[in-house]
Image (cartoon, rainbow, N blue to C red; front, side, top):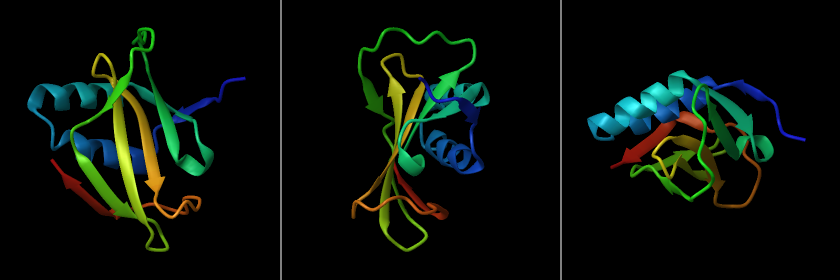
Length: 119
């Protein structure tokens, strides 16, 4: 059984917009367009992996994925280091957000105010 879709959260939206602000114009415009038409699907426990479904876009058969070329770092509510990774599909369309908590514990509440982007 598949997980139900939900609206993209404010946290996810802010993180995706931060990535878009560090991309070349064409890639940023596509990411903004995808975000405007996206719904989220929980794929991991506690928001550690979230997939995106883009309305009107039929995703091609899986041919791999790649991270957007922006390195992200942030902290969880308890100060633990997190690395969010925003992935695109082989066609360059919004696919997935993965958040790695390096100590292996479950996510608590990632702090968007601690987000740092390196492009």
